[in-house]
Image 1 (cartoon, chains in turn red, orange, brown, cyan):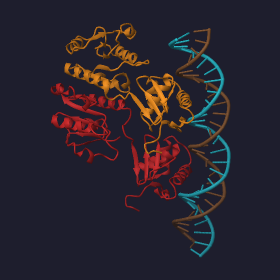
Image 2 (cartoon, chains in turn orange, yellow, cyan, purple):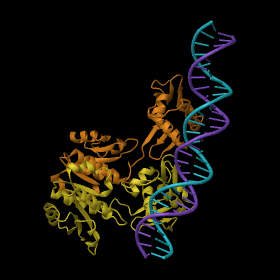
Image 3 (tube, protein in one colour):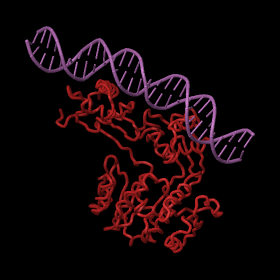
Image 4 (cartoon, protein in one colour):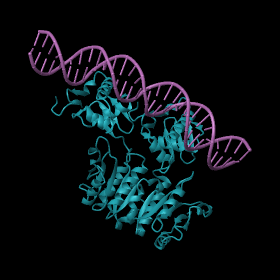
Length: 226
Length: 226
DNA sequence: CCAACTGTGAACGGCGTGTAAACGACCTGA
DNA sequence: TCAGGTCGTTTACACGCCGTTCACAGTTGG
């Protein structure tokens, strides 16, 4: 999943720990001006802003995230109960809030509820390598920006390979991981699917999938640039 | 302002006191069957459901308020922190929650935030995609400006799909999100509704709904503009 | 009581998938 | 250098899954 934007930098330890425990990926940003510069390629999935230590900075951050053409959603605001009164007439700055000191389970529930409400992980999850791009959400593939029509198994196989570029997988590994642990069939199956993949990638990019003789197949270059 | 529906009957004293202090008008309803009978002429403004004393009854009430053609919004759920874990996958039953024992200021803030959101924020009144336009308020659909007559389920399905254009949904996901998480029925149901939708969209626009073999269905084009 | 809406079972057809077999490239040893 | 073997590539084909479509039953509302 795309990382969450977290304010301030560094975040309160209990917040960081709680996010990690919940399995969220996140990145702290200390200043509104750094939001664009620090934005990952996939974009922000949402934001968690703590007003505990620096209330004014937090408000500035919220306002900055919400203005502009693409307001960042969802946005969760963490505040102390003494600051509750200041919230009034600023409801446009956040989607939900959570009182400090927070209970980890409450934070988890609020984040999940927010993402459920917004309907999706906001932006597409992508697996990219060189000219290849796989959109996990839409089950679509593209090479050099040109869409490629893949069947279900072709897509799954390519996704698995491209998730670990440079790593060699044996046919047995591929069969058990892509086809399923209980799959029982010949190893030739893998070969044929690799061939169909290469054909669809086109002559120019067929070389993205390397054959490692007597071992298996590898997607992309090895780490030594062979 | 219209009264809030409050559960249970009688409500916990601290809840009643807190609502009164905040200047809310409210009316307690102890049983889902009494929601219609006790509804004031102006209708309910929203609901506050406490799961403190009777968790199962509270869930039943939430479900009852949310089902039907006119789900009651906004709905605030009050729960003890030990019940947090039960919330998962029931995010459709409420719009926000508040942990017990509650802080009066927090309840006020959450109610105000909810009414602010349902009043003018977040929820789009129109879902548009290319030639398709869905009016959420009036439950009407139009293609190329021409109104299309959709049944309830057709409308809900199309609205859900069109809310996340490009994203692929499995039949299971559609059944749980559109039909309800507790729906138990065959996946063929989805197919047939998709077919009816395509028919009503007309030959020209039937392609708006794509079949992703072995996966599910997708509305609209991918974000790569295929 | 009729009409519209919704869910389910079954038949049909297409295409994705797995497998066999021929072919060719590469390696090894004599 | 040639023979034999190993391994990957390529082609062809049949099976069966999966989506489509239709018919019909159950339900609800007017």
